[in-house]
Length: 149
Image (cartoon, rainbow, N blue to C red):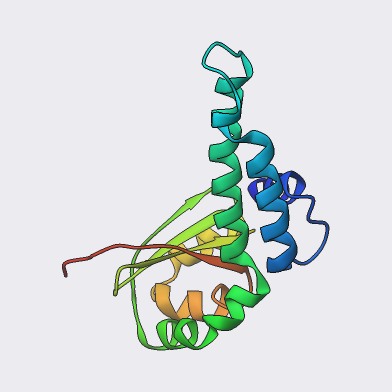
């Protein structure tokens, strides 16, 4: 959740993410912090390189959790969570990362350590996640790996 608020602050997003406003803010920040704006010997060039990477990462992250993105991918997500199984999962802080059998990796934000422990102790991970996690937490598709099963 810290990451979400950090990126929202960077892009001046206060409530729900509007993709048009986000894109405008992204373009303005890229113009301001593009490393090519600074000379080689300018001390701010290195800071600009770090900021430009953060801006790009933040933009892609916020786009992935935007309501419009979730709505566009809702049907595929529903099929995945209804028909696929769980290959692997791990918990880092308040983020639960689940790898599905098709190789898709989703991150679920705000999952407490207690809930994660309940999932670990459950005899059926998929059923537990379907009932308690899939539609209960903010999520994003993190990546799609090629998994050989």
